[in-house]
Amino acid sequence: MSEYQEFLTERDKIDFLIQKGFKIERVTENLSGAFVLFKHSENKRSVTLHVQTANARKYFSNLLIHS
Image 1 (cartoon, rainbow, N blue to C red):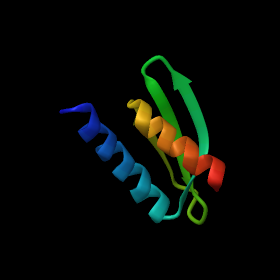
Image 2: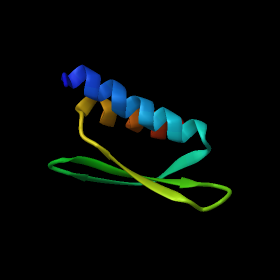
Image 3: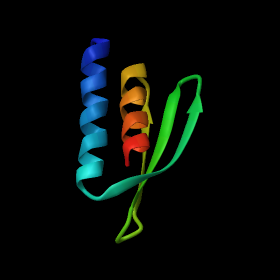
């Protein structure tokens, strides 16, 4: 899969979680990407997403800053 396709896949996963009411709770960066913890505000469910592409990391960082 091309890097652009990987970015689109990761962006779609991020957008899906945001649309379902999840908020970014915590971000842990390391050499293999970022682990983003999403928590739902109502039912306290959490999901961890491993974001590997640089563009997807910039994307969620932008969402985090503007929220």
